[in-house]
Each structure stands twice: as C-alpha cells, then as structure tokens.
Length: 306
Length: 303
Image (cartoon, rainbow over all chains, first blue to last red; front, side, top):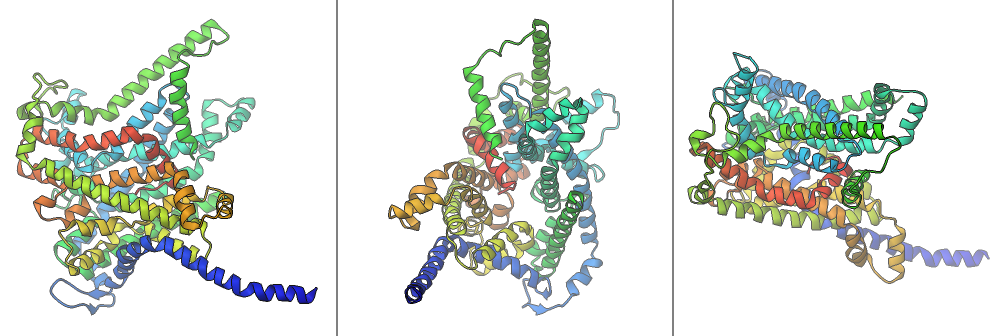
C-alpha cells in the first residue's frame, strides 16, 4: 500500500508541476494582449505621476529631484487656492442635489405601470448625450438677456434674474445645475437596481404591522437602500472632484477664474505650460482628496453597519 | 442586479400581450385606481417634458433663422421651418469628415477594448494561476485613480514617441482600459465552472472554451461593454482636444466646439450641428438601451 501511494505521488509530482507551469502560461496568454496596453499606457503613467510630483521638470529643462518644493509652491499659488475652493464648492452643490433628485426619480419610476420603461430610458438619455451639445444648449438657455431660463424667471416675477455663465457669482451654480441635470439619470439607474433588489416580503410584513406609506419609506426602503446609497455617494463624490470637461466646454474656467477647477489647472500648468513636475504635484493632491473622501465614506458606512 | 433589465423587458412584453388591465373586485375602486393611474401618467409626462426640455428647444432652434433663436417670448415651434440649416452645415464646416473621424476612432477602440477585455477577463476568472488576484487588484486600483492624475505622464510619453496629433495615440490610450476587463470578469464569474469542465472533457482547450462557449454565453455583457465604450469614445472631449491639433483629424465634438468659437452668433446653425452630433448616439441608444442600463447596474461604474 505505502509503496503504491509513494509511487503514485512520485509519478504525479512532475506532471502537476508541468500542469502548473502550463496554467501560468495559459493564464498569461489570455491576459497579455490587454495587459501590455494597460501596463504601458495606464499603470506606468500612474506610477510616473507619483514620481514626477517630486521632480523639477518642464518642457525646457531636464528633470531634477525637487523633494517637496512643488508642494511648498502649491501652498502659495493663488490659482491653486481658487481651483481648490471651486472644486469643493462644486462638489458641495453637485453631490447632494444629484443624490436627492436621482433617488426621487428612482422612487417615482419604480412603479408597476405599463410603459414605465419608456420614462426610465428617456430620463437616462441626457447622460449619454454628447457633452459639447449639452454645454452649447445650456449656455444658450442660460443667456442672461434673452435666454429661456431668465425669461421664465421674469415671468414668475423675479426682476433681477442672475447673469449665470456671464457673471462670476452665478457661473458655478449654472454649471452645477447643468451637471446635475446630466448625471441624475445615471444614478437613478443605480437606485432603481437597488430598489428592485428589496424583497417584497419586507413591505408585506410592514403592511401587516400597519405601516403607512411614509413609515414604509423610512423603515423599509431607506435602510434597505443603504448599500446603493453608499455606492452612489462614493461615485458621485469622486466624479465631482474629477470634474473637468463639462465645465471646460461651458465656461473654460471663466469668467475670470470663477469656475476654474483642479483638473483644469492640471491641464493648464502641465500640458499648456509644460510644467510637468509642478502639475503632477497638483494631480497627486487631487488623487489624495479623492482617496481621503472615499476612505472617509467607507469608514462611516462601516460604523453604521456595526 | 439584472432584475432591472429583465423587468424592463418584461414590462414591455406585458404591455404588448395584455392590453386591458385585470378586472378588479369593486367598480368604484377600479374607477378610482384608473383615475390615479391617469393622474400618474400625466405627472410622469410633465416630468419627462421638463427634463427633456433642453433637447426640445435644441431641435426647435435648429429649424429657425439665427435671429429667431433667442427671442422674447420663446418660440417653441418655429414660425417657418428652415430646413436649409441641415443642408448648409456640411459646407460651413467639414462635418462629414468630423463624423467619419469620430466613427473610426469609436469603432477601432470599441473593437480592441471588447476583444482584449473579454480575452483577459477569461484569464482572470477561469484560469487559476499564482499572482492572478494581485494582478487583478492592480487593474481595479487604477480605475479608482482619476484620469487627470496621470494625463501628464501619458502626454509626455506620447510626445516622446512622436505620436501626438495622431489617432494612434488615442487608440493606444483608450483601447486597453481596465474597465472593460472589470466588467467582463464580473460577468464571467457568474458563469458556472462546470461548463468549463464539461467542455474540457469534450476535448476543448481554454482558447476553444473561450471562443465557443464563454463568448456566445456572454453576449449581453459584450453588448453592454461595446455600447458603453462606443458612446464614451464618441462623446469624449478631452482626449481628442489634448492630442489632435490638425483640423482634418478632429472628431465631431472638437469640430463643434471650434465652430461655436468661430461663429458664435449663428445660433441656429450651432443647434443644427448639435442635433447631428447626437443622432448617431440616439440611434445606438434606442437599439440597445437595455444593455446600457444592465451594464451600468452591474458595474456601477462609468467607462
């Protein structure tokens, strides 16, 4: 018996080793075509961005080690202060508004009605429409003199309608309104998926207990939606801090620096002015903000679940 | 999470097969619930119109003369329909060329992304080998890094390779995204491994299993990924804006943006261009809307 098993294991070992090697080869052969592109054009640039943040390097001079010089310069850079403040203000407007509206839309469109799918699809449509077209239309809608939005405001009795994208004070709210309108359909889809995952037994049990509409909403729907709300909150915050293209096409950061955000500053300093090192330092700050916000939300979520 | 799409399609089906509502117990209650339903439809329609108002205004403006666009009061229906906007725009800017460039980029990037993404996803989900999960973690981690944070190194690389102002730069940067691998892997994980075992007994190797079993089974996920990638590439502004400087390489987004810069007072024509830039997306969206929604619901992430 012992000799038999020994012999068996002896003969099996080399084959299992060659099988293992074959598995590795097969596995890598599947991954490699994508991995080559991914490593070269995503992974290496990500790592390089971290290193560049600690270098002096611009389009005219060779790179040299800078230590924390770039970050010291950031502290005194008024462009950075403005962009940082604007990005935070944008997030403070964009996140709660989009969250509330997308949840409201999802609740409204989660009914069993014929043709409801049509309404869902139509509300989702702005999200996939080209950004330039959206920016163009909203810029005209926001026209301070003859734009439809201010005409409407005049009609309901507001005499001093805001100047929207033409004024420094109202440009950021205008951009926030446009982006909330564009994004709410996307997050509505996530909320709808979350709502439909709630077992109907929960509602039936609540009804047996005599719960009304509001009680069902507060005690069944909202608690059951918590994982979805968390996901939406994280995605929304991250996308708010990364915001770039919509603002850039609508206002180009203006008027003045009224809608300058961090991503645009990275583009200006890095690609337009060729300050690779300094702009990478701003990138690193942007990444750290996104990281801190995400980790912070994870912690809150964990504490709630406990 | 796929309940959402099955629900969408189910409702579409029931809408076709059962035209009349089930008879209810009490007549009065039925009338009241019918009234409630009618009120709900009215409310939903009003909501829909409010949300889509910018599109309605865009479409109506594209049929006007320039001086009729920003009028007091607003003309929702043009007095006379100026169809010539749609004929003239092709001569005003090389719109056909822009559309062609956008289509070329979107098709090539989508094809490469779907092919390499689904291939790699098989390696990440169906072949067990050491280091696999660590590698996948690297993929997922980069999804969390904002693109703006590494666009500078990417740009410097492309500049040194002499690839700025070429389509190659954009294709290389966008065709191997981690998102496609992630989306496909999530789907492949739901396909039971027993299928692989059975196919192997039938004499198929891993490449055969991928091509003949997994790929046909994952059509919905492939469609989701393809549609999301196509639309994202078509709508991308920053990529072409940073890399493409020659007019003959411009995509429709860049072309449209520069058109506003040049002819800022030609409101109607600008709206015409905007409508034309949306039409391809509209058609693709209508034909595959359930794949969009299921793709988003399963991944919870943008492409």
